Amino acid sequence: MGGKAKIENLTNTWYGFAVFSAIVTLLQRGIGVFTLVWGALGLVVSWIFVYLWGRALVRKSSTARFILIAVSALSTLGGAYSAAQASWAFVHAWELSLIITAAYSAVSAWIMAKSFRTLTDSSVKAYFA
Image: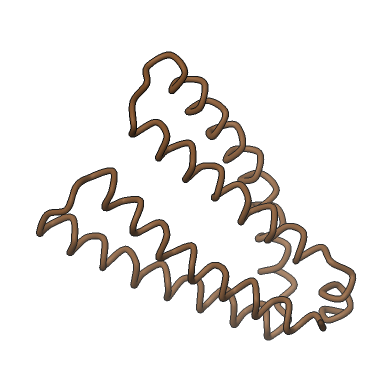
């Protein structure tokens, strides 16, 4: 798979993560009129944001790639720490919301790690050269 295809695949993964985030938000805050409206608005904003970053990467924006590498590296560590912290809190408190938080943080860390691996891949580097 070439660099452009890997970037497009990563962008599609981020679209799915935006949907996952919206679902987790509904689970944590409950299903109500305002929650549904704000969740839908958040989903649309997330999709626009992903679209713009994805297009910037496909257009070979080195600045966008550099920023995303730095953010994904730091966010991978933050997401892993947050998942561990929520898991440890669950062991002591036994609350369902802590499991949801730990799962969301783990998935968040995974997608950030995937983004970092994709953006530092040799075929993606060659695509930007």
